[in-house]
Amino acid sequence: NFESFKYLHICIRLLIVPEKWFPKHATSIRKSTWHLLCIILLLLFFIYLCYLAVLGVMYLYGIGVKENCDNALFCLSEASARGSLYAKANLIYFYYRRKMFTNVCYLASRMVTCDNFVTTSECIQTFQYRAMSMACFLYALCLKSGKGVQKDELLADQLFSKSVEWDPPLAARYVNLVIAGEL
Image: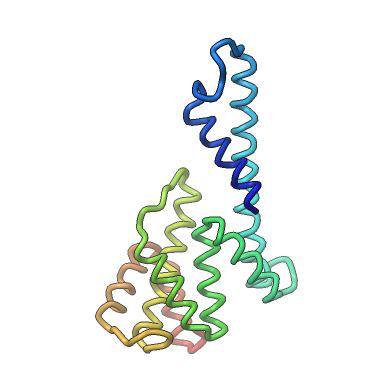
């Protein structure tokens, strides 16, 4: 909600320029306490974002819980609205499996054309690459067959190769699914 984003924005500004927010006479203990509090709040926000994405994937594939399309859609759309690339890619997959090709093309085209994502660790980087590979491959499938968008085989071929660059094992698995007729 808006209120939580307002506090998140304040925490980020406090971490970037702390001297602007504290009076000159504030003690260093008070400054460090607020600094620590802001770090904790940002960490909790990040954990919540990842939690929503993971929960959505669990519901989507039925991992550890009963497969539930409604809960998967809710969790994935909430996490993708908050900026999770992995949730957005799985939301694209969700739409593709349910033959909602216009939604697939809209989300995937926005994701594929935006290459300016920030990676902070190797784990996060791996999932971001996987997300980009998923988006490229599924968008390329739509472009190649003309589902939800005008047919463009040249762009589809470029996106297929981009998908292989981002995550070769995932692209190979998707190719096998296409050959088997499951995707």
